[in-house]
Length: 503
Length: 105
Image 1 (spheres, each protein chain N blue to C red):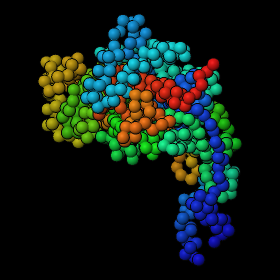
Image 2: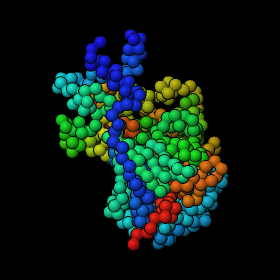
Image 3: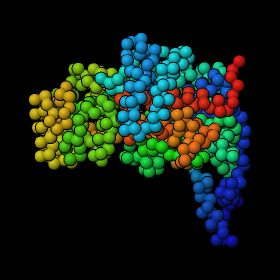
Image 4: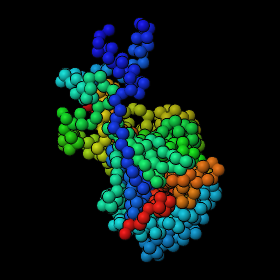
């Protein structure tokens, strides 16, 4: 055995025994430590800093913002902007809608705190220099609560970060929080590790957890999600870090398994994909046997269509014909927008190229056939079943009636003129929406409902805003809860930490 | 004693040095050049990559002609080894959400 090989073995043993050269150990002190610099953590950081706290904000990724970089607008009721436009959405009405949508499974005190805070948060954002483009609905025709930000949430977060930095706030990138430090039943800091392998001990009077859920943690999805293979969109490194840390410190579970179900789609296709935009138009969707399984216009309030695709086992096909391809790509464009990513009436000029490229891969995401018989063969469906579905769909389109699912007749379109196109789609999610039980001050609670002193949990790490499904009735709910819960946490944490206000 | 050595060798497998990429072999890059130690105990820091390949700005300039520029992305200045690897195949972390035609060197 060579000397070098021998040294390798000894080196390996040393590593196994934890004898390797210790990385630097650093101790930092703060009034408030915040784990996660997404929408929730960033709002909390600025709010706490403005109230005089010394804040250390930890972020796992190399860039800040997390999934908070990808939202367009946030919820508010009775905001000054709504009032100026004559939009009447009272806080009472919003509260009741959220509670009823959740079948009163949501935590009413938390929902109330969120809704009541929301108009003041719009004023706070305005005061930081955030401007708004318009107020829209969750889905076309819905209640106008979605305060769409100029430059979207990415711009909002960069403004909040600038303000935070100007107040001397620290942001440590590539430094995930790993474990809470507890003393006498209180949370008094967090252990972290940075990209260089240094171990950080952040001693703080309070810790705010804002790590954005567990959308990328396959084990947790397997354990908690109704459809564990759900495709995450806009999430990276969401391993449930904050949730697991809080649980380890004694916090109780709440709302695990609720996904922020998105329009069905395919892995690897971003929300801007024209291939998906065409396929999720509410025309004709079938299950793997070739039967309709939903009112396709549930895609307008997409948690509903997500739920339906989950229920049929997670695979559906959207089928349209040459006439519809022409309508979408060359004529009127799409009737149903993809949020702010692809607006209504946009012609899908890249659809043909995208479809052809995907078809050429031959991996079974898209199909093209000249006859219904060939389409059925390619999709592995019985020809008679698919034929019957198409005939019924075409009768519905002609008579402007949908006896089975009562779909809005505007979305009944015949599938009659070849070639025929099919796209396979699966459930996707924009994140997870539960984790830790909190009270209306965002304080973490244990299984007996007692507060864990010094621990606050916000945004997508917190449970209590939902029943079994993501609520899109009131647009901007997720970003709205992130920002509002972050601010609520900061306000309460500075009081708990007895921070002296800024002079 | 021999059995003990064999046992130790099995234990040591996870950290046993494997050859780096052909390009690094050709350039005669030694373990210590990247890891800072001849018997590496942990991954290479980004500074080691940047010493030869240039910093993020240089890499962004070098790859700006690609359909998307992986070194100028919304993910920020990600640690090089998140995408580029020497002792296993690399994979662009962009692909966790996107379908780009990117070949990780």
